[in-house]
Length: 121
Image (cartoon, rainbow, N blue to C red; front, side):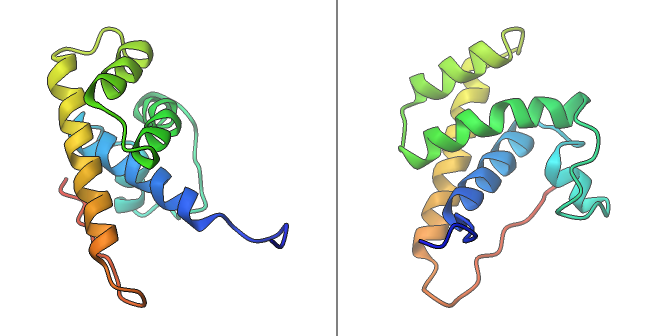
């Protein structure tokens, strides 16, 4: 594999993680909220506030999505990263369900076709 090639599947799962986290928490000023407000995809901006929270969760949640992890795994990550999060069980389950729906939609998208998702906020 070319050392300059991008691991697009990793980016995809990372983007799915951001979307699931930011919709379900909700985080209006995370990565996708900033993009919806006009920030360029390649402009990371300042890593603070909701964006910092989204980034802290996106890496571990990305791995859970890739591995089709259990609700307990999602709960453990949220409990570690956001120990004061109210309704932790509900939020973890919501993120899991959103992530599974995104992964299912991606798998159902035929090669060469587009997968479209909506930012609801």
